[in-house]
Amino acid sequence: MSQTQFTPRVFSGIQPSGGLTLGNYLGAIKRFVDMQGPEFETIYCMVDLHAITVWQNPADLTRNTRELCAGFIAAGIDPEQSVLINQSQVPEHAQLGWVFNCVARMGWMKRMTQFKDKAGKNAENASLGLFGYPALMAADILVYHATHVPVGEDQKQHLELTRDIAAKFNHDYGVDFFPMTEPVIEGAATRVMSLRDGSKKMSKSDPSDMARINMTDDADAIAKKIRKAKTDPDALPSEAEGLENRPEARNLVNIYAALNDQTVDEVLRDVGGKQFGEFKPMLADLAVAKLSPISGEMARLMDDPAEIDRILSRGSQRAREITAPILKRTYEIVGMVAPVEV
Ligand code: AQP
Image (cartoon, rainbow, N blue to C red; front, side, top):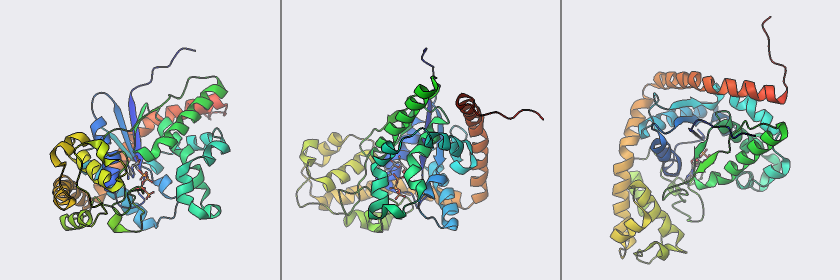
């Protein structure tokens, strides 16, 4: 079979399941901005259908979706250049998601560590949607024939599943229709950790607000959270190897490097030998300098929610020009009878 050439296309999404965190920014949004340019078509999504796999207060979901859109734009995503959408406005995501529910195997889904983490001990009471989440995520990506997906480290397993689903679909139906999407997991902060526990991911839904930096935190809150961040008593090393077995120290250095567009070694060349008492205020100043312009712009954009809604509606129209033909062809391949003029 001849190899199909796919248009270089980037897709990625974030759940409007709470306020944006520094983890979402460094692991995802900042990378989304980097990938905007002539090399790729870029599509970025507020994945509201994923958000409801755990309970969302409806008013909060609406607000969080708009605020996430404001965050994307404030961080540098240009809604003219990139397609910005909320998932529920592009029905082909959910339609292809169903087809992929029928392609993915139970055994594959049961291995997904994010389900185990999120469902916790009470898995019997988790929603069916939470279990099926990775098949819908595969559809989000493949309904655009996306070739590249920038994500944080925690999404690696879901992207491997996306490739497994694409390969099984192509094999079962004897086609070369869905691409083998490449995960793009790069930079110094692919896994930003909790400020309170260096073994846990920084997360929107962490019950402790002190564990994360929210994109809407003001300068005082950022400085306080960094000052109180858990560390160890030793000075910073001069080389990256010195961060081994020091998860909290590594996390703060990674955050500094990612915010300042440096490598960890470059940062340590400058700060090696310093105590945290000296390094933490440097990190706080840097974080405030980088994040305050974004949070200020987010607040300005949130003053005009109608404009955000217009951006999302325009985005969904553009998105459907890509997704409708791909879904139509998928249905043909599967053998669904198509509508005719009547
Ligand atoms: N701590 C993190 N470090 C690096 N990247 C991260 N991402 C999330 N947390 C970190 C990346 O952000 C993108 C969107 O994630 P999501 O909102 O869809 O889901 P999530 O990974 O479940 O994020 P949260 O913050 O942990 O949300 P909740 O608390 O609602 O579950 C992804 O690319 C992810 O890798």
